[in-house]
Image 1: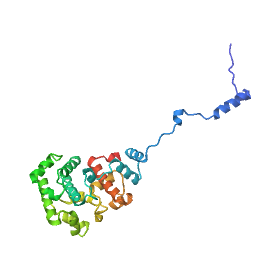
Image 2: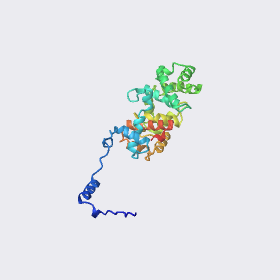
Image 3: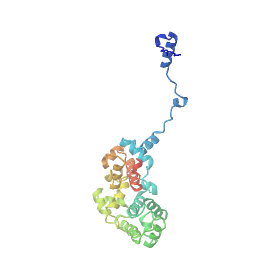
Image 4: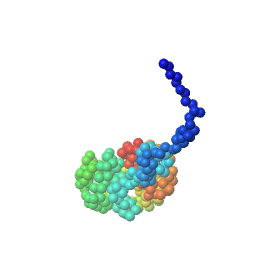
Length: 269
């Protein structure tokens, strides 16, 4: 026995059923309660840093803020030298650091050695003149600079003598002798033992915080890091403008960029 298939057309359905189906199709679907909850926003600094690590920060100002959030300290701050309030001794301490950092030494070890010089009571040229080169060498070797040779220790002791004899132990007198011009200051600084352009560059990076004629300054390390993290404005004046011409912020940025260069963490920004 054959049965015919019945084809039910819409016209054959009761009007109440048609209306019910139509109503069901227009009712909005209610999402789960969890999906309706609003995410708690991160603080602005955390958002910027997180976005930078994902490569999502495109504006240079945001990228600079992410870099400062990650690092944000000058090398002088790390070693405890206050260039603004510390007077001539702080300038001497940063000069010694410039010599040590320009040697073949890891950045972390260099920082330990620089701190050791100050903690040992050698944070002024007069104090440095009271120790022998051998004593200075042993101090550095025992504090991060294991491979320190006699030459580096000799640089520190000899330069203390030169600074004391020629400039009364104060680099501000060298500044005056150079008529406060960066070019002449570089020439006079290079007359110190073991100081070449690389050492002067390190010295200038943070001394610009108190020597107006140096600002804005950035060495090759800082500019290379700026380029590799994606800041297109890789020129000292442009970087200073991105910092709002805030000198303290700018010096912190340059130190942070150098830290990125030394730790090879470009990809994190």
